Image (cartoon, rainbow, N blue to C red; front, side):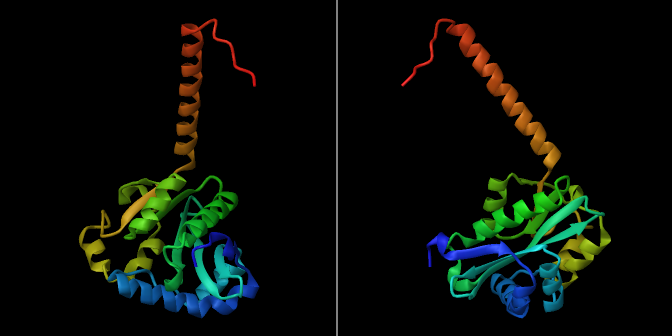
Amino acid sequence: MNNQTSFIITVADEQHVKYASQICDEMESSAKARGTGIAKRSPDYIAQKMLEGKAVIALQQDGTWAGFCYIETWSHGEYVANSGLIVSPDLRKSGLAKQIKKKIFELSRKKYPDAKIFGLTTALAVMRINTELGYSPVTYSELTKDEAFWQGCKSCVNFEILTMKGRTNCLCTAMLYDPEREKKRMAANEQYRSLAAEATEIENPNLQPIHS
């Protein structure tokens, strides 16, 4: 199924709790298939995220589960992570992951407009999507220092590597969206466009706009 309009992508709520076990099973099997690890979550944990309005779910038109992602907060809301992105195996390469990431990113910005949004991933496709959303690769030192976050990595098969390196790096790539940094970037771009327009006007003072 490659028709992106065929998916229903929405903020999850109580009616979607029935999919929690299926989502957890798929997260685990997907991590094993990639030969990497993820912080394991229980169906109850996933269900709680749905009930809190901190998750996005994708369904096919017939109600079949298609994909999922949820929000976690750290350091008293200073940092937000869009975690657990998963798409049903037979729907991968359909563009669904990108749609879910965009939806959960928008939800995160709405709920936590001042928070830094970060992620750790080994998936190249996720890195590409993050880049399009405005994330930048960063060192682990720019991520949350919240001990609870790092303890969540214990169930990952690469946790020993993370520990040996003193949490300075691991096999995952760290990416971060900083709203303050983004504001400065946009302001700089706007200033550049303004200066470019002024320069064009000075060089071509008699240039008249074309009206159609």
